[in-house]
Length: 346
Ligand code: 1HN
Image: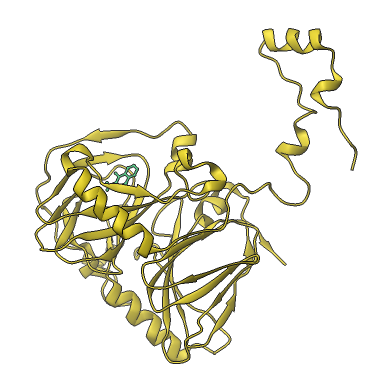
């Protein structure tokens, strides 16, 4: 490959003349912008064990009242991007949020899309677009772009959830902002009930399609788990047991930018994932797994979270011979497909 000229090769006065006119020579940066064969990856394989996050999050509950935080969150920041960037990967933001009994996180809406994966506790709920969604371990609740949302807690113990947002991308595109709102009236029954039976959607008077862009906001863990365990009974042992969280009206990804799925690792199973362009996040719901990201191995138990950069080999292994592991996965594939940069490497 041709070695290109460096900035230092240019006369000092010439460089100053360029700078004074807001001009920059491309060739000294061309190889860094377009590295050969594979992108330069800032995203580092990183693990956030819940045993280390939880006490610090509970301490935040003592140090900072909810009124002073609005959302009491510890961000899972990837050191490869710099902690101050508060991103897990190029397009994924992760945070662990704590809500204590009686607390209230007031209504707002914003341009980034969010989902919540409930990690611990009972009695909290989030109201999204007038739909009051109860929160239980493993439930996935969508808060798509532009929908009002607020969180409350009628229970007795701490409730913790994992927030996943496309905030780094939305922020980068200079489209990130929020609007404060008033407490919502609960106006809708749970939309999920209309899609509780596979392959059947409401079709009143032969019409088809909901008038809502996001007809299903809550994906209960009992349903996702049941789908995985029944798939495991019919799937060939060589096929991965994985389900995608989709819009039940269209079958498309449930959100525009990040994709969500749940995976069951059978007892003793080892799964080598295809090497793909999107970065991924793994969060263990039940059981445990060893996740090997190009030679960096993490052992994850319930509520532990890790991330892997794109273009990188990832192997998942369930060392238990008797118990299945259930893993929630977030990735950047809807974004990569829309951009036309989605790749699977041989
Ligand atoms: C947000 O609105 C929530 O509503 C949580 O709970 C985390 C992180 C960045 C920006 C907005 C929430 C967030 C957030």
